[in-house]
Image (cartoon, rainbow, N blue to C red):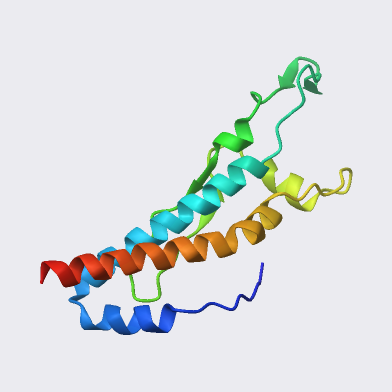
Length: 148
């Protein structure tokens, strides 16, 4: 997924981060990435589809039935541990051995149409997550300035 957003205030944050010791700057960036990841995770948990109550289990073969618990996909949403380099990297994913069917819901299969939820949730939460990132990094810079 490629998206472009017009962000403001990050040049000033970057300049302030460069004036801090490496360890302090890294902590501020990691805390900001965690906070923005939490915003994305909450949005995905709200958007993840939940199986309807009372739906019938799917049969595979003669005796095997597959039925995920209600809300299983919603519980598998999580943010990765942020990478703490200057670029900063965060990934939001569905975790768990049986969460693979999230990609089938998102993109569809040849027998099932797409029911996208991941991209729309990420796009809807992007600006709030960027604002949260900026707030937390700025708070970390202010805290470091007060301590020194």
